[in-house]
Structures are given as C-alpha cells and as structure tokens.
Image (cartoon, rainbow, N blue to C red; front, side):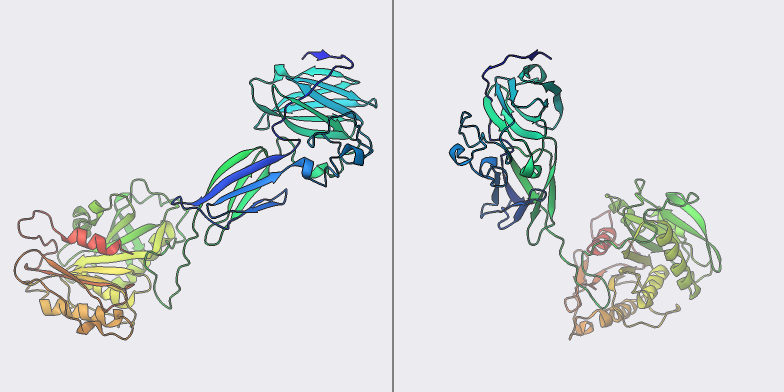
Amino acid sequence: MKHSFIMGLSFGLGVIVSANAFTLTGKVSDESGKAVEKAAVSLVAKGLNAVTDANGEFKIHQDEANDPATNPTTDPSANPTTDPSQPSDPGIAAIRGNAPVGYVNVNNGILSYSQSVNQPVRVQVFDMVGNRLLNETLYGSGAVDMQSSMKAQGTYFARVSVGNAQKNFKFTSNGKFGVALGETVGASKVLMKAGESDDLRVIAEGFDTLTVKINNLIDTTLALTLKKKPAAEPEYAFGWGLKNAPAPTRGCGKAAPGNIPKSGSWDFQWSKGKRTVRIDIPDNYDNNKPYRLIFGMHCMGGWAGGVQQEGYHGLKYLDTEKTSIFIAPEGNGNQAPWGQDDYTLFDELLAFMESNYCIDSSRVFSMGFSYGSMFSNGLSRNHQDVLRAVAVFETAEVNIWLPQHTGKPIAWMGVLGLQDDLCRPEMGRAARNTALKYASAEGKDATKEQAQEYGGNGPHVCYDYKDVDPRFPVRWCTQNGGHIWDHKDPGQNQSWVPATTWDFFTQF
C-alpha cells in the first residue's frame, strides 16, 4: 500500500448517490407473470415502505441529504457547525453534532484526509458484495492510494473514521467526492453499513409472504415472484375433499424395515399367526414422501404371488411416476380364501404399513377379482374410514361373510362381464346398488339413476353416476365376457381394465 502524506492536496470522489443513499425498485408478479397490485413492500430494519402500483412496480428511496435525522440542514449559512469553505452540494454535509473534525476527499481512487484534531484515521473499502478490500489505520493528514485495492472499474463502499466520527459512502473508482466528518455519529447509527444486510418483505392478500435478504443497500432493481397461498381445504363431517393434501402416517421419516424387500415377500406376524405378504415398493422410495397404498386381493384358487406376477391387476405398470406401494396378502388357505378373521388381518397389516412406511393415509385402496373382489367389496361396507375407494372385478354379496354396513359412503368401481355365470350380472348390480345407496348426493337416490350398459356391439361401456356426491364417485363398467378380470375390447390385445381402474384411483 502506498501512503502519500502531502499537505494541502485537493481531492474529490464521484458518487452515484450521496452517502448511504439508495434507490430500490422492482416489480412483483405472481407465478403466471401477472402483476400483483397493492402489495406491501418494506425494508424491515430500516422501516422504509412502499406499495406496488397497477403494474406491480414499487420504489423505495433513501437520500441522506434529505434525511432530517442525519442532516438537519443542507444550507451552510444556516448551520454554524459546517465549514463554509466546503462544497455546498446536498450530498456533502456534516454529520449532526459539533463542528467537523475532518474532511475526506477522493479523486480517481486517491483518498485524501485532513483533520483538526490528532486522532487515528481508519479507512475501509468494500466491494459490492461486502468483501473488505482495504483496512488501514493512519494518523495526521495525508493521502491513500486505493486503486491497488480495487481490482476493476466500478462501484465501491468506503467507511472512514476520524476519532469517533464516521462516514459511510458509495463511490465509483474514477469519480470525485468530498465529505466532512463531525465529532459524533449520532443518528448515523440507523444507516446501513457496508456489508450489513436487511430483509425486504412483500405481503399481498392471497399470497405467501416473501422475504428476500438484501446484503447491501445499493441502487437495485428486483423481480419478485409471489406464490399463491394454497386454498384452504374444506372441512367435512366425513371423508376427504377431492385432490386433498397428503395425510402422512407415523411411518414417514422412519427407515424401512430391513427384513422386507422392495419387491418380493415376507412373513407377516399378526394376532392369529403368520401370513405371507407380497409387496412392491418404488426403487427410489423416499421415507419423507407419502405414497399411495394399493391392496390386491386374490381370487378363490389363486394366490398372492399371482396378483404380484400380474402387476397387481396391471396397475403397477401404469405407475410410471412411482407414487404407489402395492401389497397383496395371502388368503387364509381355505377354499373360501377370505373370511371374518381376514378383516382383522387387513387392519393389522394396514397398521403395520402405516407405522413403518411413509403412507398417505387418505389414499389407501383395495381391489380384487372374483372372491378377492367380494372381500374388497366387504371392506367397503365397514372400512370407509381408512379406504378411499375400492375396485371390484366380477363381484357379488353372496357366499361370503359380510360385515354390517356402517352407512358411510365410499368411492366404488365395478367391472362386469355380462356373460359371467358365477358372479352373475344381478349379483354385481346388487353390490353396486349398495354403494350407490350411501354415496347418493344430498336429496337424491342414485339407485334410481339408470346406468348405460354395454349394448352388444363395440367397446366396453363405463358409466359414471351423476346423482352421487362427487367425493364418492361410483363407476360401473360392462362388456360382453365371462368370469375374467382382464376384459378386452374387440380387436385389442390389451385389457382396458387396468387403465380405467388407475384413472379411477388417481382422480383423488
């Protein structure tokens, strides 16, 4: 560092704005780019405020020369403590207090200082992001070459202290400026120092509050985007609203059990013994993300491994975004694979999954074919508190233990082959009408609504009932065909059932 102690040398510094003055402008928009009018914008620490106009624009300005707390007057003749020999520019004035104890001038990066008292002179220079480039303590009067500390042309901050008097200002590396320093800093404590930060806060009705850290108050233009507050979810005496936010279970945040594979099976210990359970978990499972849980119930003569091999009635192959956990418990081993005790199995298995995995408890589903559909349909009668919907392929409400209906609604989808001679069409329609009875919209009886069914030609027909509560939709799909779950339209090689079921489950 080169120090030149030359008495009587004249110096100046070109300032973009006067010491500690700044203009902060910006525009506030929503996520679509639309201007947000009447947003309250404030610098929290400095207590400066503005309101956006019709174009979403705002301006916050502070000019030290016009701040009565910092400069009681800019007229040298009206202030006997100001040296009349100094320039009368409004940006060049003494800090409130006694007579100036020194003067600072800068010209093309050469800082000159003089004082009327013998005090240390401390000179600090900062770049625009608050990095300190120069820190010197000098005595008497003289000059400092600051160019060696400034790596490039541009704007810098300086902080100069003579004794207890201090001045902060912003300057360009090749400009001119001069300022007087008073004996006390007084109200200058409210001024932002180089490197000190403030919070810019934006508040607008219907939007989340936005807070942005401003590291240095300089002439700045900001583009600010507000996010709309999520709509408050309606409250219901029972059930969830459509597209409700996930309801995470206590398993969220916990490590998954080490003895259970992501794709395979394990022996589940429950209150009445052990039961093999098939499971498929996304390979990128995140224990902080709530997942949809889908049960697949096998048919009479079938097994849980068959449900897994078929991709859980094809739904696993449609879950391309890996949002679901699929599970298929083994039946009880009897000819009728699902009985009264299996409702307890379902409860304990669901509780295990929700305790050990991150499940969205508002999106638990059950589906099945034939006797598996009859069990899922039975669950729809008394598990409406934990099941969002069921999908039943060739179902009936006979030859199986059924719980008493609670009277609560549930979303329900049925698939029927009109030539099914086991779970005959009238059996499937009876099960459907039970769901319709309790899912009817207020003041309506959806069982009286005539559904369109397959007419004998063309593709399958799915009918979505109109007279039901939209939160508890009922879909009825029919086609020519026998006792199978994977019906196909004429000339097609793939079944339409998986996609239709996936669409029904994912509408929530």
